[in-house]
Image (cartoon, rainbow, N blue to C red; front, top):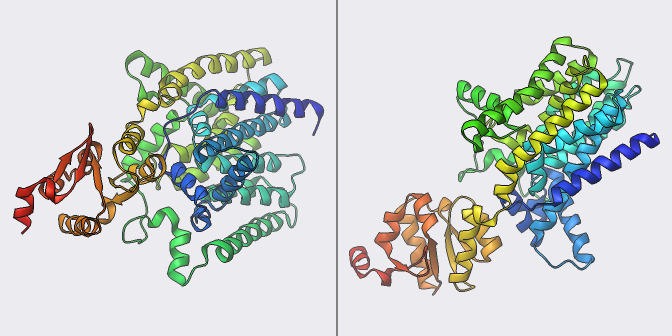
Amino acid sequence: MKREERALLFTVFAAALLLDLCWRSYFFNFDGVACAIAVELPDFRHLVHGNHLAYGMLAWAFDRAWRLLGYRGETLWTLQVLDALLGAAGAAVFASILKRSGRGAREAALAAAALAVSQAWWFWSLEAQVYMLGALFTALAAREALAENPRPVVVGVWAAGAALGHVGHVMAVPALLWILPRRRGAAKAFLTTYSGVLIAAYLAAGVCAVRPQNFNDVRLWLLGSAALNVARSFSWHAAAPLDALAAWSRMTLRVFCDFDAASGALKAAGVLLALLPLAAAARAARRGDRAARFWLIWLAGYAALYLTWEPFTVVYRVSDLLGLWALATMGLEALPPATRVAALAAWVAVAAPYNWVTQIRPNADPAGNADYVSALRAAEGTPEDAWIVVIGRDQVYVPYFARRRPLNLRYLPDEAALDARLDVLAALGQNVYVTERALDESGRRGEFVRYGLEPRAAGLFRVRRAASPKATAGKN
């Protein structure tokens, strides 16, 4: 690696990391909080999730390193710092890709800045979540594959690292295979390395952490998110074809600027900001040179999966930004170098404050996360050994932020099951509470009223029969 490229990598990484560490996200997505819980336990069986094997173990190791240095704070913060590092590193690798393709240092740095302030990349670099790990490794795989003399074994290692970050990154394989030299053995070396790393990692995780007792245990582990229902049966998270296409198309814009959070002129500005890089990318796609075809195959591979699996989930589209911005920079090549630099600088100068106003700043306000506030209030208004009824994000918020035991309505599907569980806890002398938000969001307020609710703090009720003699008489 040349000195100029090393300087570029360091500059982009440092700038992106500084940007990410300026604000803390209080959005606290479900998976990130769940991972923090598993890290604290530590629960290695759940850390090696079948759909994203490596992130949990990396998170545990990273958090452990902080503890050895004297850190005593919450794990969720260390995981957020980890994702900031991963996001910054991914932006730096992207700048390196552009530099190696012939772009000047300023143009490569500004294109990487455009990636770093794009809504999906920026937001998920602030959140504890598995996807930035895979995005970094896909960028590394793409950089090696696009090299003048790519090393198939190295491409295989990076691509396997991406799939261990999240299994969805297997969809980058067609593009990586296509771009590799046609010389004898290149594809074989890539696939052998790729499959070998994955098989070795899954075998190690299975033997050392999961330790399945039977085939069903293996099935559930590997299915992961596709078997999250109560019955633990296979379930593909699809949408109707037209709805899926509409959601996927809309998300292709929202990864740049999330205009859904705005209205009026601000919303229109967000749509325009998203359309500009897409227009440049479309121009490069029409030109259709070798690098452009690689990125188009890249995008098509991911689209084949995410048109059918949760097309409305933005985090799955993070890696699309690598391909879209690579194509966008190609689409600007007809312009003079100074004009290209000015265009990228202008986009960053407008998109960064736009995304900060519509996404980053609102989610950096703890009061903006009603579930988080509710969990903290529940902790203040209940004894330490209390049970709290949970639904949605409360399933992880209550045990993590409130440090209380969750009574999960997911496993109490009807009134009879709920009453039976409440009676068992009452017989054991356990205190059960429910928040106003849980009553509203579950739609089961009537069941709790019939059992018995005793108002406590604002928005908090104790659940017990004695609080409602009429309900008790009815049950008898």
